[in-house]
Amino acid sequence: MLRSRLACLLAMGVLAVGAGATFGADPQYKKIKDIAIGGAGGWDYLYADADMQRLYVSHGTKIVVVDSKDDKIIGEITNTPGVHGFAFANDLKRGFSSNGSANTSSVIDLDSKDAAGAPTFKELMQVKTGGNPDAIMYDAKSGEVWTNNGRSNTFTAFDAKTGKIISDGVALGGKPETGTIDFAANRAYINIENKNEVVEIDLKEHKVLSHWPLAPATGPTGQALVPDLHRLIIGCSKMVMMDSTNGKIVATLDCGSGVDAAAYDPGTHLAFVSAGGNGTVTIAKVEADKLTLVQTLTTERGARTMTVDTKTHKIYLANAPTPTTFKVLEFGME
Image (cartoon, rainbow, N blue to C red):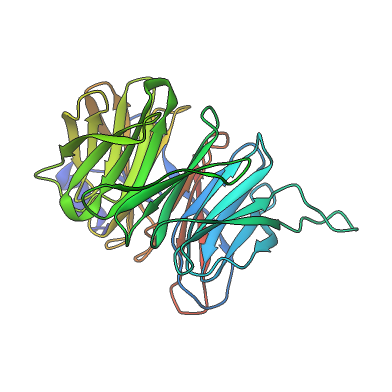
């Protein structure tokens, strides 16, 4: 977000503070630091594991693991060609990658260590998926891992313990992006990017129930679930809040260009949508039928993927200002 001179801001009745414009009494976010990762290669999702105090950051053909307590790299998960995402199952001490170039998911032992006690992130098995698995989700209650397969326009569901395929090849009607699982509602929800809609899926039967349009919003990428309110936060050409029981859009906010990720923090009731095109994160207070803008946080152009740590309430974004300066940007509440 471009800043004006102080006199112009005062004339407009707006006060710019810290990293972005403020819009209320809710906590404001500011930059804490950059976590240097380094190395060349593209990137996609990053995930904060609040319980284990780890960040899993996809980068090229590997996943870099960061101790989020000390902001130090503690290891890498390799043999993940074209990796997009990573899901973790702390109840099973396992993790799962979506390997877009190999059409597989790697199942990783998150508790494996070498003789000195350092984590080794041992691979346990590879599970075959549909074409170009992108976003990946784990649901502890059903014990299932889902990959959203961007080339085959399907999802794959497999057993997190055994790797056995439960469902595969279910047509979604378009290119799937991020999704969420709500076990209590027996539903999964997946964004269909090229059709500008959300698909509602029966979690037990693994069948498509509904196609919910997002018009006039377009290009749905990020998605987050607000389970207590039965709402979805969807990052697209706008921040959209949708009723997850019927697909009705109940609120929208402008959120910048080049949107990728969406997140929700139940501890603060804040929703986040990151826009790499103009280098901002839109932060909004969530109520049942209302989104209230709290802050437009300035990050960096190109910083599009994002995750939230629901215990520390920090948010993290990945970016590479130059081909060899890949890093994670860390923001916290004032």
